[in-house]
Image 1 (tube, rainbow, N blue to C red):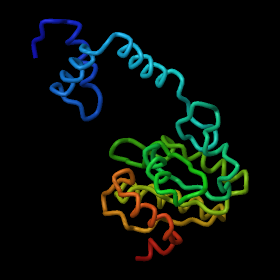
Image 2 (cartoon, rainbow, N blue to C red):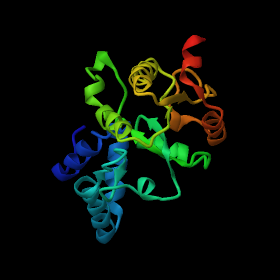
Image 3 (cartoon, helix red, strand yellow):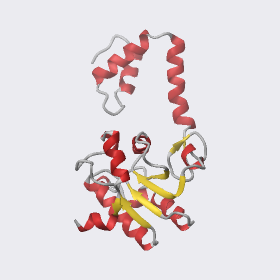
Length: 205
């Protein structure tokens, strides 16, 4: 795509690096930004820069946060003895939107995928086991996607957590095989959380 402006081409090149954004879409976005007032574009660019420079990870659950401890972990009304393990922040948002879960979370930052070179040590598993070792957690809910990688990760965590004497449950499979939590409607996801069952039952089927 030969453009009359090198600056426009640079913007298109950078926008096209975002997931799901092809060069045609990147061009539309770049031209839209070009049509906007300068103060609005400056606010946009500052928001992106602040996101990258200032967002941090919660020291408790590894969720994205503006402070050392996220709002969920700092909320005294959340049940500290119950931890829901999810893949990433999109799953936290999806579960929170159901208004069915009142415990806390642990964000792994991915799932085990040997083909992609992702093992347990590449995830926030050590932080989870540290939280368990500190005591006070009675139930861990595995809320990972219904994929091969999600099931592999759940089985790995179950073995480790079972050794630690913690009750491990898994959300009910109202979710289609191969589905991600953030793609499930709120009613189905909420029911899956409420109807969770011991993990042992899920591996006997």
